[in-house]
Amino acid sequence: MLYGPNGDTVIGPDVGQHIFDELLFRMPMTWLRRKNMPFIASVLQALHPVLPNSLNRYSPRLGIRIELGGTPGRDLRSGVPRFSFEATADVTLNTTERLRTEASLRLLTGGNPDRSPDWVLSLNGSVSCRDSHCSDHNERVGLYFTANRH
Image (tube, helix red, strand yellow):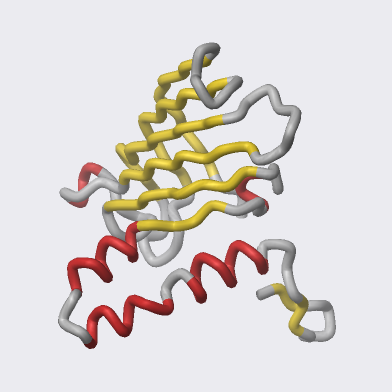
């Protein structure tokens, strides 16, 4: 939620991603747990649909993201590092990058443990393809340091 200068609630530009991922996509989880199917609910908890949003700069991409390792502050020191994998497809007719796959393993984090980390050191890899057959592709692997501005 965003709040205006007078404290009024304003609908933010990520409302579509929020409604679909955090509300509609999560609805079956309570029912699955009540029906004694906690494993299926846990699998669904790790999956996140990807729609155009501020993180992907509202690009016309649809896909799925898998996040394992719990809270955003998890890293190798906590014993269960945070791992994410995302596969998306550009749904426009003319694009230079039809398919994209990215994976990230969080190595170290720093800052206040009560909120998202102030900085992250992670190992990232990605593959992007110009067409659905992936005949022309680009690969990238690297060690990344990201600092958040507060």
